[in-house]
Each structure stands twice: as C-alpha cells, then as structure tokens.
Length: 226
Length: 226
DNA sequence: TTCATACTTCGATCTTAATCGAAGCATTCG
DNA sequence: CGAATGCTTCGATTAAGATCGAAGTATGAA
Image (cartoon, rainbow over all chains, first blue to last red; front, side, top):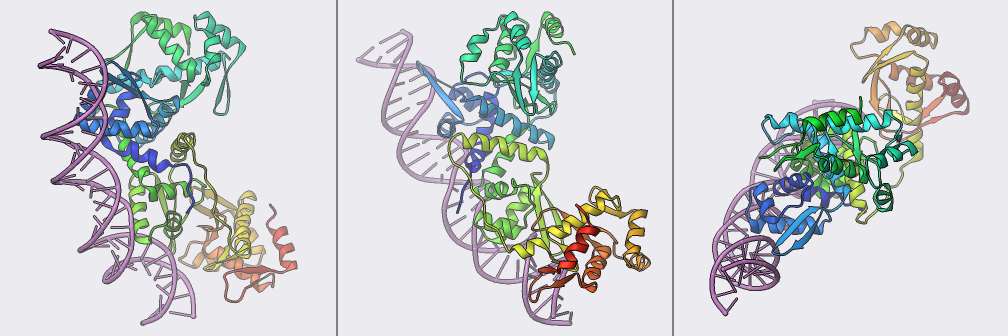
C-alpha cells in the first residue's frame, strides 16, 4: 500500500504522555538535561533516556554534550510550530492537563513559544508591526518591508545576521490562546532576546510564562502601539 | 507542575498508522465511508469502526448519516491545519504521497441516489437552484423559497402534494462522487421523476447510472444554468 | 587512583490497545 | 415481509512498547 508523509510516527512520538510532557517542557525554549526532563515527565531516568533517544531519532530533538551533562532542545523552528498548532487544537477542545490556576492568565498574556514571544503580547506585536507597514502580509507569508528593516536595525538588531541565516526572518505561528498569528522566525527570536537583554522581560522558572517589568510594559506599549 | 494543553491525546490519535492513513485520506477534503476508510488503512471494517469512534470522540472527525452510509470528514479547518503542519514536518524528513484511482465515469456524471438525482448533475442542479434563490440554505437545512415554489409549479410538479407528505420537501444529501451536497427529499424525487417522464433521462439497466438524452442535456442546461 | 555523578543499555515485567471473527443493529430493496 | 448491505459491538487474542531494577559506560572531582 501507498504511504504519505509519516504522520503516524510523529504522532506516536508526541502521543506518549511522558514524551508529550518533555516536549511541552522544551517548548519553554531552554535546553534541558535528561534528569530534568525525567522530573517533568514524572518518570525515572532510564525511561526518560529511552524516550529521548526516540525523539532524537525522530528528528524532534537535538542533543548537545557538555561535560557530564547532555542538553536536549527542540531541533528546529518547525517542531515548535507543529507542537504549537497541536496545542491550539487541543486547547480549542478544552483538553488541558491542569486545573486553571493563576498561571493560566500569565501564560495567555505572554509566554515563550520555543524561541519567540507568544500570547496576547505576541499577537499584539505582530498586529502593530503590520499596521505600521513594517511587515507585509501575503496570505500566510510575512515579509519585512524596507521600513521594517530600518525599524529593526534602529532597535539594535543585526539585520545582516538574520539575512545570512537559512531560516526565514519572518514567519507566522498560530497562537493557541489567542487563536491568531504571532511572529516567529529569526526576527521573532531576535525580538524576544532583545526584550530580555534590555531587562524588559524575564522568563519564569520552570514555566513558559514571560513576566514583563514595569519599564518593559511601557517600552513595549510605545514600540508596538495598538 | 504541568501547564498548557494536552497534546498527548491528540498525538496518540494521530500516532496509530491505521488512523493516520484515514486522516491522510480525509485530508483530501472529501467525506468518506468507514468501508472506504478501512480500505485506505488496510484494515477490516470492524477495526476501522473502532478507530473512527475514537477519532470522533477526540473531536478530529464528524460523521453524517445518510441512509445506510456514514460519511466521515475532518471536523474543522483547524484539524486540517494541524495535520498539515505535522505533514510538513514529516515531509521535511522524507516521504511523499500519491493518490488513489478513479471509478466509473458514467456514475460520476449522473446516477440515482435512492430516488433522486446524484453525481455531477445532481450537485449542479442544487447549486443552480441556490444561485437563483429558489432554494435557501441555512447550514445543513434547505428551504424552498416563494420563487422556488412558483418555479416548481411551473414545471408541472404538484407542490400541494409534496407539502402534504410527512417527508421533508428539500433535504441535502452528500454525494459520494462529488463529495458535495445535492438535492434529496420529496422535491428531489419529483424532479428526477420529471426528467424521466419527459424522456430527458433514462435509468441504465442493472446500474445506478442515469443516461441523459441529447434533448435532455439541452433542457437540463437551460433549466439549471451554471 | 578511587569515588561520585550523569547517563545509557540490558532484561524482564506488565499494561495498553490494535486486531479480527462472530453476532447484533439499522436501513434499503424487492 | 424477508434478503442484502453497511456498520457497530462484543470478546478473545496478540503484539507493541512503557516501565524500572540492575548493570555498564563516560566524565569529572578528590
């Protein structure tokens, strides 16, 4: 019989609860060790090791050895985008693993989507950039305009470096909480890095939530007016 | 602690090869029966039935009963979007897909569906009636407008008799070859009867196929322009 | 060297669920 | 009314793989 893109293999990798927990943890954007990931998944180190080997063989993860530690991370932007779209569907069906607590609103406000900003703030940022004609939208494709390029360089982002990379500069990512697009790609990553470097925002420990400081809130509102 | 949507359930639904094949088949956008989907997946009808129940419970599919048939389709755009993103990632790691073959062309053109017209001609007829505002569409429901009623009576169909019957006058029926709706109900039956009585169309022997005569083709095209 | 840490591999167990035959239910057709 | 078709449910079997204890490997520290 004929076969297509092997979505079954990918699905089965994501389909195990332990692996799904690990992947969700890695959506925070930080590289984590097998020991940390085992804790996230609530399994022993041996089991985690076996899962990580499968995820790596499936191309979802890459590892980096550093001394006695091994750091695992999502291998590409595409993996993060794929997981986010699955989360989007799961969320729309009300399939959540947690009791709605105080963390939930924080996640909806601003969070890391692998390496870029998501949630209300992520969506607002892209909207603002599009409204200012700094990013042009063609269907699902995004493109940085000349004005956008100037704007980005004025923020201190090395446009040439973005251009050099093989990754797309701008790219849409469907937001599971807002159910609208936000900005991914190397520019999305660069902007989040900028916010954190400037001290405007901080990553929460053991969470995908991003907490903006008071000055960060102000700066963000000025940079990306609604 | 855990946070965010549960991707494991969705992943496990997609992760079974049989289900993945069914979903891939349904990505074509056409509704398919359990028997057809079982063939796509290379499993028996019983197994397919069990899988379809799970996919429906998981919100990925919806079913529509049509006489002895059940037509399954992806439930929302978001499901297709999600599958596409997974296929995109899977395809980036190799593998492509190919399509199944065609069936009897005469059946696809025009045939009997119990008692009314189906196939390309059936779909075209309903499309034309809707475009002329003689049938009003509300979701899955159809209703004959005042203009439609006049039109029907002008054709020599006894509207009062249709009205008296307990059966619905207009009703959608999912077309297996076109995978779009055509007109069923007592009006659908009356129209097919009309075509045959006028000598515009004939039922093929031992087949569900309907053969239109030359004058029938012409009359049909004039009555139901595209 | 020796010990400790971080992780992998092996092997055995055990749970889950995929599978299909057979029987049952629903609908249409003659 | 049967008879035929399309599909579901039940039950038993079987295969896959998730899990963890124990043993093995690699790196760093004392």
